[in-house]
Length: 386
Ligand code: UD1
Ligand code: UDP
Image (cartoon, rainbow, N blue to C red; front, side):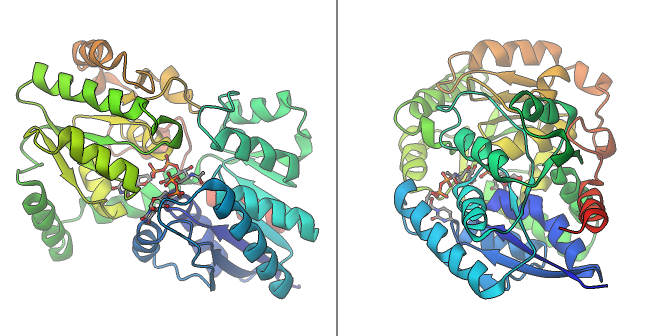
């Protein structure tokens, strides 16, 4: 039988992490010819992550510029991906989630008449301003996609409510659980490589994360950069001053605006440890050891909940309500206005962690997926032959 030529188009760290299981399986299967086109929307963050999964793009568009604007980035991706599609003529394009790379790659495929499969389809806040521009990106991709791979039943319901054809929607679970399962043995191994990695982490942090408790903080959303992120960081400072023994580890996103703000607010705070972004294995090691998480990240909400951790979500809304239902996510606002009260409620409820159905290590019972998403996606493509 003729092989199906699939082009997976990725550009940022989370797309690499969540497409890695699909890319690895496509490469191993005899039914597919697999192309991997990397837009380069992110450089260091994505390259480091591709190394973790031993992924080498077949095409690298190398498009990142410092402090890139959405207009210039979008037009560059649209035109370069169009050229890529023109020269390679895949049978199907796969995109992930809601980034500028995903939306522009889907649009280029639509213009070229090539069907699109959307992995992580159907996540919604229904508010175009939050997250911006991601909510528009994912809604627009749903108009284009021939295959909508929804991670959960709720995501499917969102698509159905928008009039997306039910025959195009498949519930697969979120591929992030596949990725975590793929790495969990590495993260917890006693190998020499891992103990070297842990030593390096401890010296970077300046304390022993295996014995001393700490919270993990990340922040990067565009819609918060004009003020709310600063207010939120100030709430974090207050939280730290109310709990003198609390350490907070913050791997700072390379976005220059986030970097300068983090330095300004936390630079002299000896409870907040600012460090460079971690590679995915190192990040999972810290996530596996931390007490709780403070984040505006999408992927980290899923990963933390999959490990049974409580998360203070520094956003007004989340497109991942499964973790709210599980009692592990708490929305504290883009400006962190409810951070202190939610933290107190969380500390009171901390005993629940042990009782939670999602115990550390048992990722198969995550509300976001069961670790089989990539297998399902490949099976659907083989059965339906795009
Ligand atoms: C993008 C995605 C967001 C995703 C996030 C993951 C869009 C609109 N946003 O947001 O959905 O949650 O990635 O991190 O697609 N930079 C570097 N090196 C890197 C990466 C970024 O220096 O490896 C700096 C550059 O100056 C770049 C800036 O960060 O211009 C912003 O990157 P960009 O991808 O435009 O936006 P994010 O905020 O990272
Ligand atoms: N991550 C990482 N190193 C870090 C911070 C995050 O590997 O220092 C991973 C994290 O585990 C998650 C992903 O990057 O899988 C999330 O990326 P980000 O928060 O940038 O994007 P989002 O998920 O919000 O789109």
